[in-house]
Image (tube, rainbow, N blue to C red; front, top):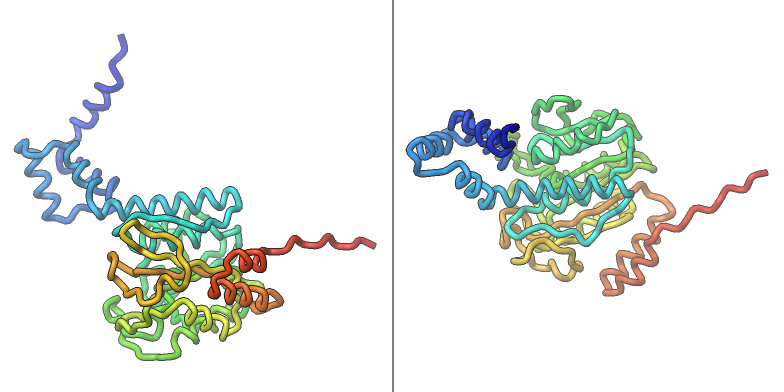
Length: 334
């Protein structure tokens, strides 16, 4: 009679030394190495029988850190599913006590449409789950730029100031900018960079992005929104101010959506719902976030600006009809 496969699984795991087991479980569950003190504590508890291996897994998967890790995994998976079907998902959800990346990553990466030349701005301190998802896209002309230098295997990286990008006009078809714009021109010593004080930094960065994208390029950007505040390393603006800034430099706001973090988790809301929202008041990061797709200035700019004004006036159905892309007319053949 063949060996019971369940027994085989038990024996394989029992053959792993406790230290190696803890190291593997931390990487599998939390996607990081165990801190030295935590590693020693877990190994000692396992060796003396005060902790079982199953209980260790339960403790890790019951932690807030795992809730965040799972939310990021879910965001990457949601974006992958949307790309496969050509969907542009809205009305996203994420658990309470998670930061805004759980919404931002799903919203932004789901809108990738196979562009060969892509710029990611602000990769150096991005979530590893996001960087791994970028590499999963296998974009031939992917370039990651940041003021900080960080090596990422398989990724072409460039040390650059967003206000003076070292690329030619129209060098990219698409740019990602997840929770980076709000830091530009401010005191970023917390990230190992020099202090700065440039009140026009974000405007200059947007102009540079418009330049390297050209009139047919797209920018997918996310920023914290709510009550205006200067928080030292970054600023928060109300959604209208962010979008106005984008339009002032020549972008057209093709699509935008606002998300609010509450006791029930992340959910889409109207602009009025985030008035007065302070950063960090409901969770570990932003209390509200604006996700937007910007395009080069063109004929659609007037239409989408009108749609945005209608949404502000509480007429979302009319705004949706106005902003809906029109089907292309067939070319006449002579």
